[in-house]
Length: 441
Ligand code: PMP
Image (tube, helix red, strand yellow):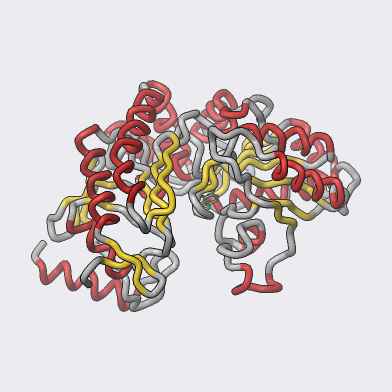
């Protein structure tokens, strides 16, 4: 494709399309991708970028994987889709069985939803219907951690961090929830008793109105890319039991190996009452989410009023998405993914270390295949995004965070190019009017 048609794509996009958290005709650049293979994106003008984002946590096996392609093609020859109301199919049944095998103990039932945010809505509704079924309808509010992120739909937003989570913008459209401080101690630092006490205080004072605690186990993603101690998660599980509050684990970002365990709950050896999965579930091929519950929860909904769970998306359990998920989980478990994640963790730790000494870097942290450089001020996206592309890497900072979570199949040379790209770009930034901008701009 020549430069003119590349520019035409960009111009047409700008005129018509919204991008995530963007505006029509925004100043931030947008790059047309023509194809992707392994860990490389090929732009429409032929430039190649090493992908440091795995398309927002999803693409764990890399792009255009022959096994995943074949799973979709095979399923396509039977049926692309069929409604799930009153009908069922092998891809959904096989995937549910597989998820029940690998998920934390006690999660025995599966609801397939369309996306992460919808899975969170489903989880919240399940918690409310559970308590109705148990004869305690007053329990219909939620407690969440500050710095959390659970999605962009209205009720999911209500349990996102109240400051970064658009609460001011949407005001009283959002139901009011309870918030507790985010766990302060890092992954390896043990638990801060003050954090546990703050959670206990809310549960003790308001347990009668709280249906569930929702949290991202061990890794808080889009709300700050923070890692916290598994001890906190263990303590939270125990408090939920003591105060009769359900625990919803949002593993939409962490599920399928990203934090070094198949599910982040495993770091603490706890099982939630409700588990949300998404993103890497399909190996990043298409949108699908799963909400898994205990039998006790499913039973309380079945025996309560109206005796059914009130949610039923059109594309529930889409066969193509279920088939590719099954193939993706098969690929993951057949691979030495733990060794890959450990190798990536080492590469991220070594490669990002250079950033630590920079005056505008507040912190550098790595857990599993997640590497984070936290700056002291937000990145100026319009000027900084092109710097990564010029270095042949795809890195998409947000706010003060420049982070990497590459596909697990990235090799050491590609990983070194990615981290060198980050260190080089971050090293050329200075703080100007409260933003990190390129030096000498
Ligand atoms: N929960 C978490 C922890 C997430 O990271 C995300 C997506 N970033 C969501 C929920 C929402 O998922 P989706 O974008 O698929 O709606």
